[in-house]
Image (cartoon, rainbow, N blue to C red; front, side):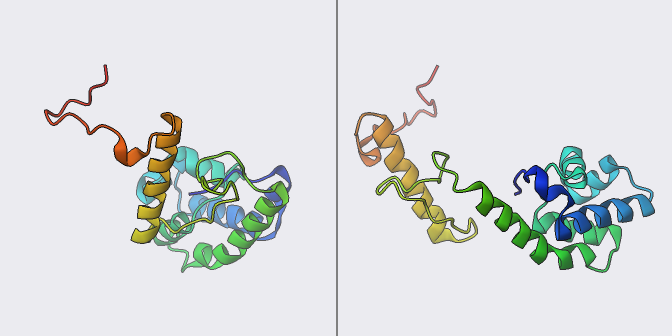
Length: 157
């Protein structure tokens, strides 16, 4: 969904406007953070973190807030600028090596981010995970791992 912004991003352009607009519209509608969270189907913690600048929201979060708060699409309209500032902030922090999907397991190069809605990308990610699991289990290819018991038990304690 969202990432933690660097401290310098808290007062920056579109991100600051997004936070301010969200809080203003929520309070104008007489909603608490919890009430808004329930209506947009995100956690209260997410609403609070986005409003305070501890986290970025997502495009989906912006769209749902627009619908609930009746903003006429103001938050979603700010989203492209928020995303651009978020990418710029991520670029200043440098690549995230060593995290899941941070490195290509075959080459060690930074992995290309994939769209989780793309079925081919999901299959490729699963294949990469299977390969990593095989490497962790001593070089045994994941395809050669023993199958799960057919009686429904996982074989784990």
